[in-house]
Amino acid sequence: MAAEQLLVSGVVQMVGYRAWTLRTARSLGVTGFVRNLADGRVEIFVEGDARAIDELATACRRGPTHAHVDGVTRAPRPARGSSTFALLDDAAAPD
View 1: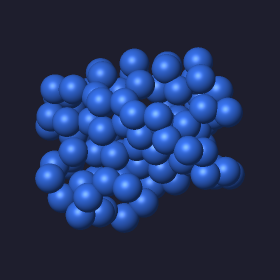
View 2: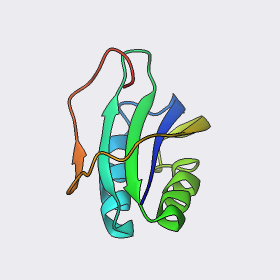
View 3: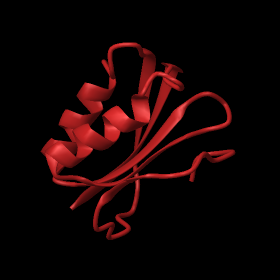
View 4: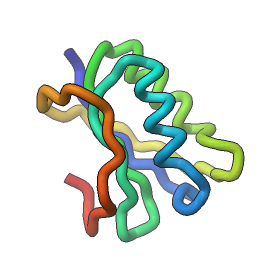
């Protein structure tokens, strides 16, 4: 099982990005979470099959219709054993 943190920058808050990520991640069968950060980015922690994580990262570069993604940074992380993909409350800084 692979795990990564994705940090998405651009116009990605108040455009349905988290809800879109939740649907996309669940359709790919990965687990983890998505949340807004105080600096305007969206943080995604994802774990599962490496190909599914790659698909999610690629999709995140487009995002939902009203988003304008400037970049997606990826960093490997230790797996946490998440059982679902969840939408979390906002956070001041990424984990």
